[in-house]
Length: 295
Image (cartoon, rainbow, N blue to C red; front, side, top):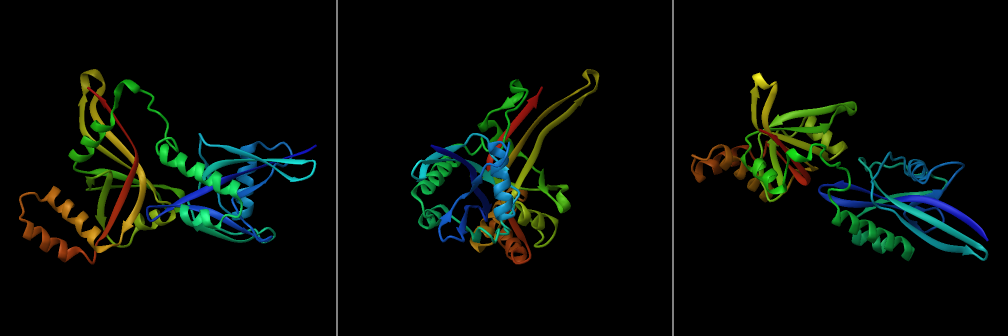
């Protein structure tokens, strides 16, 4: 019996707040998830990363916690195991390997399920999507080291609601971290910011929509104890520019109500109307939040 081993990944990215999956239209005519043969002494992870890089041009990040192995027979006396991992692609700009891949497509789950040729690939994609839905925090985030100072989710959300400003961090030019202080408003699991319609923030989010936002609501130095009494929260999520006018208006009204609560509704409406066309609104969908305090 001939045994063969391949590895690959369900590759996804996030664009405009939507999760999209990578599909390969192969030269032989079928549509597939990215995978390939193990070479030499490669580990399974090394094989998956190499195959993705060679076939798509993407540098991806393999996520912990998900793997799925399928076995099938490509012919008599021949068995093949294929292990799939889960991989996040910061960029959606691909470069197909012409010898094997005729084109690459990003598709949402329903569209991807209709395009994939093999039922085993469809089942693998569904399993990966279910995993992402069940474990939004397990994808990238490590537990807090000092668990005794950790705030729970309700306390973290309260800090986000109470805070007046924070620091938004993105992957900036040349991969350098870019952090900028901003006013914000928190509503229904989302953070909203406003600013210019061009600049470093927008360029950064178009390259990589992942971001974090840190808010400090208490910061008191205690010199005699060489320590600080503090309370802070960090929210992680995917950033997008809000383009639909009704959404923009709602976010700007929420910001105006937070920072100008004494103004009338009519006054805030005039301010929103005056700034709407020239203002960009960004929305951070929070997928993980962590808070910490010392007193």
